[in-house]
Every structure is written in structure tokens, then in C-alpha cells.
Length: 500
Ligand code: UN1
Image 1 (cartoon, rainbow, N blue to C red):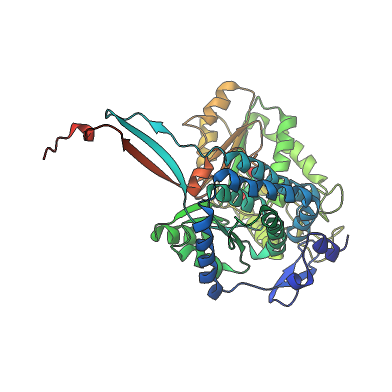
Image 2: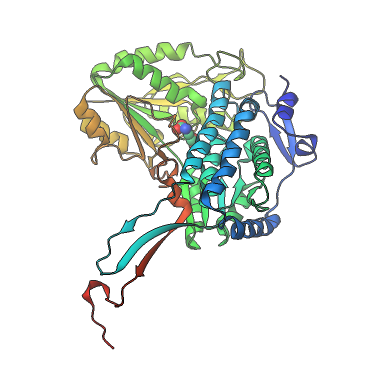
């Protein structure tokens, strides 16, 4: 399919694709896909005001009815899965199966949110006073700003949007400038769902703004955006998070990761190799959850490294649309340059690098293709502690589990982690309070590719936010504790006497 056929199939029209000043290129071959019109910072107050007006109506719609909108969105996404997946591939360079997987992740969270729309449960709590009842009710908060990153251009938006909508909140979406077309096509699926849903969906319920950091800054600054969910770099989160908190808003941050796997002596190495390679080179190492550090027991280190070198030597790198390709391009040449510079730093710290070069043969011209790098490090240096959004896997060894867990935790980030072991004591120690300090900790599974049913997010510089499954919905609502006195007396709590 030609580029323009993919754009058309995803529902984008000439008016969407021409006349603007934001140039959109495909990372596959550098081709210009569109000139997109941008929202300006001056447009943001009106956008936010529309969302506030929508909130006044949407919060009164019963939650199960709000769930119906998300159910319809899920239907639209099912119908558009192939086309939207192809657009993800064209615009951010994911291989076909991962582009489709992203849309599946959206469908999954829609299903989750539909069920949730009938389960926004609060607790009732035993009161210490006779004739009293205490209860919690969860209420919507208001417009939710969503800043999303290029690497999961639609799934992470849907985690936020599906939950926010059933919780009773409008959304304003500011996608990465590197994935605007995917965002526009996704917005069209939402518009189709809204049209089918009918009149009780207010105007301004789901808005999309296209442009740069100034739009995110407007969302971060506005008191009329009580929740701001931001996915991206620690640098971005370090700016946006404090801004939101300074005006008493609620940030939900999903920032950097520097995810490790501990490989213990008892590990099933065949499984570990598959998990390592997918974790480290899948999505060309551009997941927040990508595997970046391997902490291997000394007794199996050389064997595992030999197996990995064999696997790395034959990885199919190239056009992400071709069947068989496992590694597509990096998002742009700046990402490739950062990767190569980081490898030089690792060499200077004593690292031995396998792979990790620009690839120009057998790949489309004008894409930033690289061979993934395995880097044997003498120790966990500052370069290893730094997240580089590229397929670099640092390999280190350990002698006892306590040391391995200390290394796993000794980075500024705290998103995802895992251990490969068949030893129950080791596995449970890794998952215990004295184990991994990450938001995600897995056993015999790599650090990436989480299902939507669990809460997603992490600690430390990862930002502390939780999105997606479990009770992450509570981040989009406010809790109201109510005590009702149905007695004929007015006893005070804690036995306080205040007789008039
Ligand atoms: C991200 O990289 O921001 O767990 C999200 C995973 C995906 C989501 C990644 N389900 O790898």
C-alpha cells in the first residue's frame, strides 16, 4: 500500500493533511506524509472552557450510560484495527504486529472501562457512633489533560481516555508532535462513536489539540484541568508535574524507565533469551518498559552472553511493514545519534559493545535504522543508570541475589523489573518488600508488554502515576466521605463533649 492509501484508509482527508506548518515524516523512509495545522496556545483557553462546559453535562450522565460511549468506541476501534495499526507503523515505525497490538490494547481497555462503568465502587465504613452510617462516593473531577508520547501513540491515550470518560470527565489530548496523524485518525474513531451515541454526549467531550510543548504547558497551568496525565521523558515530567501541583491539580506521570532483568542460575535460559531479545529490541528499544539492563549470575554469564550474541547476529532489521522484520527504524536520526553517543560513553567506561551501529544496507533510504547493541559492562556506571530510548542492553554480572537486587534498584527510575528463576525463594524475595522497588515486578516474564488489567506505572523518576487497570480509575475521581446521622442525638466522635 502506498503512504497516501494508508492515510486515506485510516480516515484522513486532504484537508487534514495539507496546508499546515507542522511537517510529518515517516521514520520508515523519511517521506513527508503531511503538513498538519497546529493548535496555538491562544486557542487553549477556549478549548479548556469547552471541556468545562462539557463536564457540567457529562458528570450527570449515569456512569453505565457513559460506559456505552466507550463500548461504541471499542466497536469503532475493532472495525478500524487494521487501518489504524498500519498508520501506527507508518508514522512511528512499529512492525506490523506491534502496530496492531497497540490498537488491540485500546480495544482491551475499552472493554475494561465498560465493565468499570458499573463498578465505580465506594466503601461503607462502620461508624463509631450509634445511628450513623459512613460511606465513600467517587465523583468525577473535571477535564483531564492527556499528554502522550510518540512510542505508544494511541494505547496510552486510550488508557486515560477510556477511564476518564466512564469516570465522568471530558478529555483534552495533546499527542506527541511525532504522532499527530495517528492521533487525528484515532480522534475520528471517537467522533464516529460519539455520533452513534447520541445527544447526551456534550460538545467538547473529547478534544484533540495538535502542536508543541506550549499546548502542554497551557494544560499544566490551567486550574480548569484538574487532572493532567503526562507520558514522556523525566525532563518533561519534571517541568509539568510541579506546575500542576503548584496550582493544586493532580498529575498522573509515566516517565522514564531503566528496566532490568535478573537472570538467576536456575533460570530456563531458552525462555530467558526470548524474553530478553523481545524486551530489549522489540519496538526498537523504544518502550518505557524496554529491557535496558541485564544482571546475570556469574555462573551462567558467559553462556547467556554467547546465546544472546548469536540471536543478535541474525535479527531482521528493516522496513517494519515487511513480514519477518523484527526491528524497524528509530523515530528519527536524533534518536540514532543519541544511541551512538551513549555507546561511546559506555566504551569509555570499559564497556565492550556488540552491534550498535547505524544500518544502511537492506533498509529503506532516509530512515534511522540501527543494529541493537549488547554492551558488557564491568559495573553499573552512570551511563548504565541513564535511560537511552534505543535498543541498548547493558549486561553485568552478580554473585548473590541481595547484590543483584541492590543493583536492580540502584537507578533513578522505577518502572519495570523482572527475574528469571525457578527457585521459589528467589522469586518471592524479588517480589517482597526487600525486593524490586519498581511499579512492575515480573517472574519469568520480561519487563515489557504488560496487559491492561494491571495498574501501569512506577516509582522514583518514573513519576509515581498509575494508569490502565486495577483501581487506577481512582486517579480520575475525587473521593467523598459522607457520614449520615439517622439518630435523634448528636454524639461527637472521639467521645468529645460540647454541651450547650
Ligand atoms: C510505554 O512504553 O509508555 O507494557 C507503554 C508495555 C505496553 C505499554 C508500554 N503495554 O510495554
